[in-house]
Length: 79
Image (cartoon, rainbow, N blue to C red; front, side, top):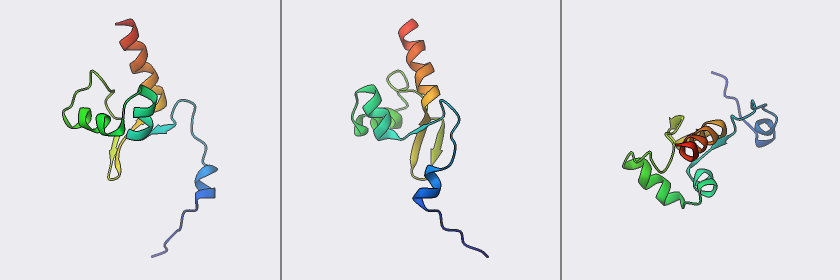
């Protein structure tokens, strides 16, 4: 089996489509004016009135796409 090592410089070269930048709980909290712990508490209680549903749940934790967060913010503002 061939093991491939991923270098940070390689990751920086991966193109991400517009709006699909990934936010972790810390970045989502900063964007929404919340602390990481608050985001995780809402997530564990499934309180999705205060945060959007995560797009994926990875072993390292939940992630959100930038575009999804923008759409969620628009729905909250308009609703």
